[in-house]
Image 1 (cartoon, rainbow, N blue to C red):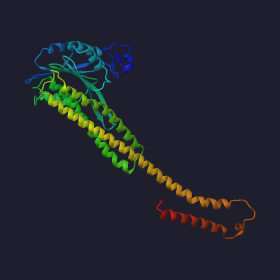
Image 2: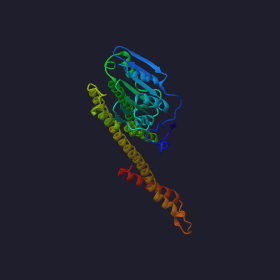
Image 3: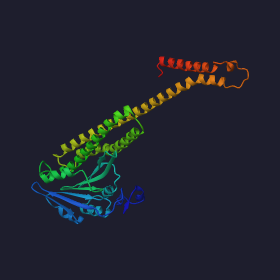
Image 4: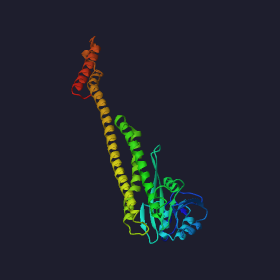
Length: 352
């Protein structure tokens, strides 16, 4: 079954597998990286049943499942690996908050994988669920394309600790690369903030305000993905699960430190944007005040002139000035003199 929102699960028993997220079609695809310190094997899995043969192997297996909308495949994998039904329910529900749960024979981790589209000022998010077992790691993704290529390259090259450590170190590596891409998004956001500042100060306009709101939406999405991450990593690092070796826990502390840095940066960017919005509103208000001041001065200058032309526009019969030969140029000169005197006084007072 497939659904787009939570309402489809109303009244159903816990553990019922219903996909919640973006609609997708087609069967899930499975890929395998199976490695030892001496060799690595990569291949596609055509049948989830092949996973069972890997459980008794001495090698470390990474099974990547792309397409959690295929709930039947997810259910088969869960049955083979004896994954708790509530975990399977959370895997196919792609609206989960990042979290970590410890079970007897596996760990369950939910992360938000992000990619930032700078041109559109849009943050693309995707839920990644991770199952850590004694000798295997299973990742569940919503769609093709991920940020794990650096981990794959390290496994293929055999350099570093990737092939000498166990499945727990592989799980750490996947979490670490997800957090590293948060920094990539923050760097792009920082560049946009720096580019926005001179525009904001020199000639702010509606487009500037729209950019500020776009960036605020991006930071809200990023904040939702990052804030639970600190608690998640801390719970894994402090857990007493035998699935996480003592040699891996210092690396988890490093991920914890990175998550704190990301949170601090996100909060500082939120404060900067709040300041930018205040500057925009102040600049707009100042521009409006300048416009109103000019209009007020013009209106004030025309008040006595309007009074004069109003007086001589009356239709009384006995108005001596109307028969005077120089009355018309005299009135013009008087009005110009009044306007000039008022403008001079306004200028002396610094009103414009």
